[in-house]
Amino acid sequence: MLGERLIAAAAVVRAQLAGGKAYPVRLEELMGSSIDALKLVSCMTLFRHVANALQAVEPRPQFATMAEHASTILTAAAAQGYRPCAFTEEHFSSSILPDGLPVFLSSALPAVARAGAQCVRSIDGIHLAADGLGRVNRVRS
Image (cartoon, rainbow, N blue to C red):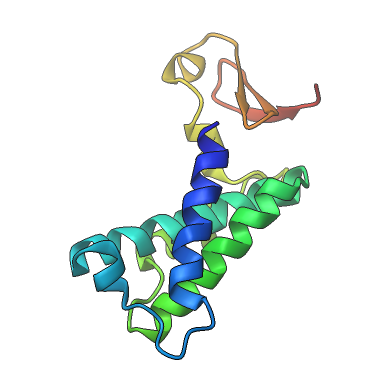
């Protein structure tokens, strides 16, 4: 449900920013302030990475759609002077596990799994397992 709502909200923002209008809406106007515009750009930077990473692991239309919305929003935001979040970009460029899963997926697992218990977590239908040593592996359902 959350993924569907995120995609729907991103589609609305995308339409407002890149809707083929002669003068697209300013990001500050759409979001209400420059602070909220920065928050949107930060979130879209994160969501683009998450969607692309999940799409690479297990292709699904909703991952591709979210990645496309986020990329289009970020392109429109950059045209208005809002660059993608540098912190997020740097974090993701150096945070890939050997099996291709981004490290952020491992941090989504409860800390108890890293403390010695077995844990399986499903993130949008992709099952991840953490062993007692904190190693994370994808598990096919």
